[in-house]
Image (cartoon, rainbow, N blue to C red):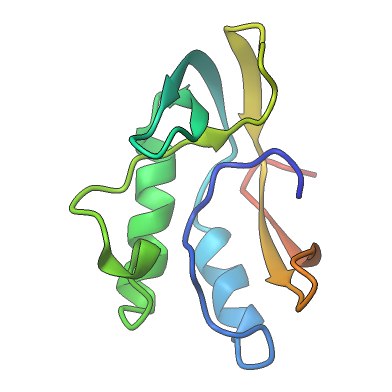
Length: 126
């Protein structure tokens, strides 16, 4: 799985996803820059980088959740969705300048691997 900030998980099975509706929804958002500015950890020990500003990621999640309310983020397990870039390395140089210019639709396979089903470019991306 590539480095990423999750927009919505879990989501519908890829065989029933309306890709045209996703394309229309994501076409309303502009590409944006952010900085992964510090390393944090969730209570379970998972380490992650905080994207700053977090608002564009929160807005993407809210838009998908509003359009498909039957798929709440993390199955509704958390009161607040925290945008995060999960890391596995012991040491990551921060801050990292980043650009979000696409949203990937990923599929999880029975063996635990992931593959990209489709990429949705955000506005301002050629």
